[in-house]
Image (cartoon, rainbow, N blue to C red; front, side, top):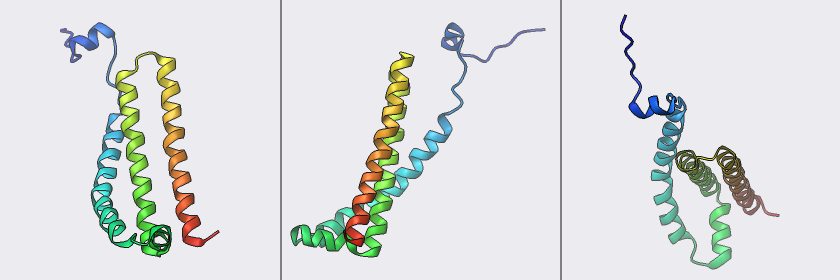
Length: 129
């Protein structure tokens, strides 16, 4: 019997196989990027046209139900996309296990926290205080 191995030379040297987790991150980044491709131009154009009266104009813009929903979707997609991108960077370039775990946990808290605070701000402006 021949023992054929499909591992790369680097994989043989390290004794490691595939990570088996990259596909879900790749798909998540692509889906969030598509959402951002539609929502970002809307936001730039709508904000430029709708926010001419300072804070009162901005509050009126965000208070409109359609703008509120689209802005919330933009914030969710943007912070999710950021979180996935930072996760990939940490996983690829940080090799010390404890530092990697600490940064991954911090990254999760950061993007979830920023999303929550941003959505709270949108809801507070939309429904008043």
